[in-house]
Every structure is written in C-alpha cells, then in structure tokens.
Image (cartoon, rainbow, N blue to C red; front, side, top):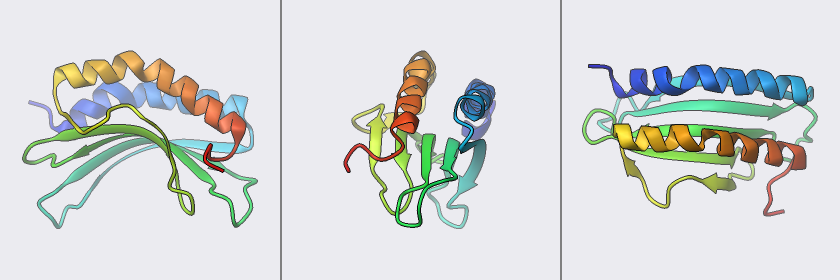
Length: 137
C-alpha cells in the first residue's frame, strides 16, 4: 500500500511538472519548480508538501517574491488531513485561494476532488502570476 507521500506524488507530481514548464514559457521572469518533501520528522505530526513554486525574479526586496500552489498533508502517520491552497511567501503570507474551508480527510474521494479542480487552480495561479502581487495590497 503506497504512503500518503507516494500517493500524492503519483497522482499530481507529473501534472505539476507540466504546469511548471508552461509557466516558465509563458512568464520568463518567473522561475517555476516543483518540490515534494516531508517535514516535522522529529515530531509526531509529519507533514508532506507537494508544491509548484513560482519565484518572481524581478521582485524588490520589500515585495513577496514567492507564490506557490501547495497540496499539503498533515498528520501523515496517524490521521492524514489535506489542505490545498495558493499562497504568497514572506513578507506577505497571503492566501489567494483555499480549496477547502477546513482540512479534508485523506481519501480517494478527496484526491479525486483535487484532481478534478486542478485545471481551475492552475488558471487561478496564472491569474495571480499575471497580477504579480498579492490581491490584498
């Protein structure tokens, strides 16, 4: 039986790689890359994150320069819960879009929902990239 990390990577990582390539072509001043990592390994609350990170290479030192579409799983060893969002890095931290109002139980049904809305999330990500700044400023 695959782990949470393996299941998420097998369902979404190749699509994230395709989206990253499309972003690099459409937005030459944005460095797009995909990462997948486990965190919190010294705690009982292990986390897995699959992200499509978009670095704005021409952002000033006072502007947020990182925007990411993240599929995040928490409590992966006990009762996995999922979050999916598009958010800015420091100094903003603003979340542009959150797929779920509350964490969702890790399940095939939840993964199917994410897979079904991934094209809309990608479109939303592109819209935010075009704007070039958080929508709350």
